[in-house]
Amino acid sequence: MTAVLGRVVIYAKDIDAMVAFYSEHFGYEALHDPKDRIVEMNHPDGGAGINLHPAARSQKMGQVLVKLVFDVADVAGFVAAHPAFGAIHRGDGYVFANAKDPSGNSVSVSSRAFRNQARKKG
Image: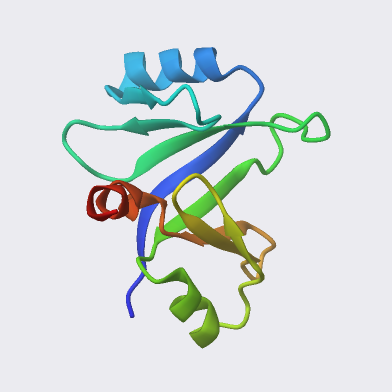
């Protein structure tokens, strides 16, 4: 079972400013579903995407506010094989599980990248 770095989650207080920054400076395009609080930013040439996630009040800007997200079609299977990952959580049409790397950075495995495929089948 493989896991590929598909996107980086950046927690932000001002999502609009972040969209403008990554669009203007790096050419990313924003995809915002009004039913989803996460803004997905993808580059037309490919590469890892950026998910902009509203920061909690307790999160301080400039500290560690990044999460590495690995795309995994079968999150439950991955978690069963890798017990460092915790409980499976449900999002809008996808599931994910979290862990910390040895330095304390947030890491997630997520089926979010496959949710549109699942919606088309369902």
